[in-house]
Image 1 (cartoon, rainbow, N blue to C red):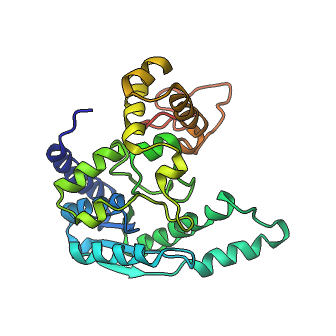
Image 2 (cartoon, rainbow, N blue to C red):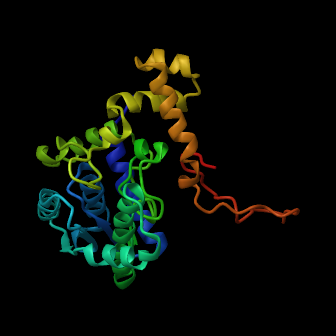
Length: 276
């Protein structure tokens, strides 16, 4: 997986600048979690449209680790972008209360309310400011479905969407982000002690090698051999890709028995990372 961090840096800054201009947007809003992905996206956005046109939102819940919000604030201060801290606990509580007759089960059904509440707040601010919402997901997460549909999977554009997690770390070093942020164990912050690699069941270094081999078209056995992992690990990752396809193409619309000439609006012009 050859990767030119410098060229990627320049390309993404130019892309974001052009994307904002074409959309008639003043700038960008994003959630700053205190992790490396959001820090990289914030740094790219700042360079693309200037610090005055980027707003970072710190969106903790009562169950969030206070250190994450502190790290997010540190990132915003380091980059010189405006930030606001908004507690999403009342929003989440309101949703849980509204479901009292059908109590939300413990686990992801309950945890996923939080990223959806965060995205709602992000879009409310973006609408006020005439900005676009930046997603912070990377290719490793998007391919394996490690994101919340209509939560962190509902932004306007994903600058890191074609970069594996290991490449995001390289880009973070290219951008000279603080080592404490780069070296921080990746976590979605869904519950105390939660980590990405714990949830995925594989280290990002191994996951990315497997994903690259799968994308290259290799079969399970070849992928396992080339990535130096077990066949069962490859099978588990492939299953994640297949079963999460609906999350990458959320607008699934059955075609009727006719087709109009030209472009069919039901088919995305640019398919990103495959889908259902």
